[in-house]
Length: 241
Image (cartoon, rainbow, N blue to C red; front, side, top):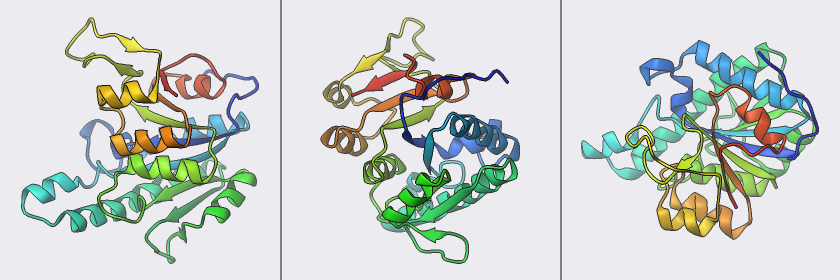
């Protein structure tokens, strides 16, 4: 794979991945090939000298909406989703460790047998030492998405940018899959993103980033070198600031 070099614009990033990024074509479960692909993308960014924290969703293993449609209590469905994110985090940790990237998993819901509890200062210490930190278990509270967890943790660890990795190369004014004339925004304000109710991030995450001045980049992780170019400061994806 082609490599980039240069001085990163961002020293510390919060990378938000959807659970579907680990599932491959089946959109369900954990595909070791996809996990290895993600791990290699993280490693290339780490090798540029960027400190990397991650939050992963759980859509490949559990969707609370389906449980609620069947009558399940919202809090129970959300807790199940939080537990599922730990499975994804452990899979990615294993893939990263196998390619030489020292990684720690921290969880908002304590599971001391498999991961550290989330402690802000300890997470920062790991990042300072060059370790990748995967923050699982959401916020530890129901009614919050993993987007909100990424925004919260990104602010707590003083990340320079939050990168939302999707399968679309930015934010559009309409669905680019349905509208070939859809316009991609290169840059937009937080208020514009809130008013447009963009689908890439939930409103709570946007508001939290806006209130604390944490910029967001929405990009396509599966486009070669997109993530690397973003951390080097190139104009890729859509930046919300």
